[in-house]
Image (tube, rainbow, N blue to C red; front, side):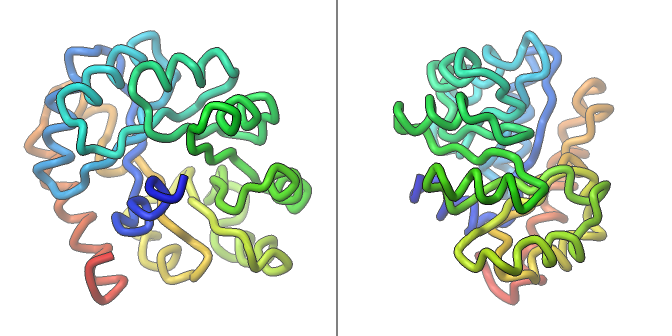
Length: 215
């Protein structure tokens, strides 16, 4: 997990992508890489997701490509076999966490309460997804629930856009921010890869400006 976590820390952003057609996977990944963000969380919300992840991992082995919205150990295994370098779940699913830990796959389960943070601690985890970040109270809420758990780090995801990037990355326990604002579903469906690349470039610049240096 250390390698995946360190790369997330350096990048500062995790593009959360929904791919409905596996044919879009490689050009989308290319737009991310060319924009300066060799990372993607391919959500397992569509039938095309496993094949899309497989194509990305094969074409761009240097990318930090992972699987999101993983709800079962079977999906976790499918993601690992497709080349996922990390797994993300929307909530704390003990069965998914156990499978990933037993099989050496970095896993970042979703939490939004102190109880769930303590469940993660009980599994030896120190980095979790904070979801849904904005709808549940945003950074003030995250600061409140993070306060008793100085050993924990978070990847806030959900409702976050470019306007919120600076404030989240300015909070020490935040490793990276997950979001889809730079990979809009509309742009993917219309195959507007130039637009994706431009938005990614803008997001990467924002991270550099926020942190004062390359992460």
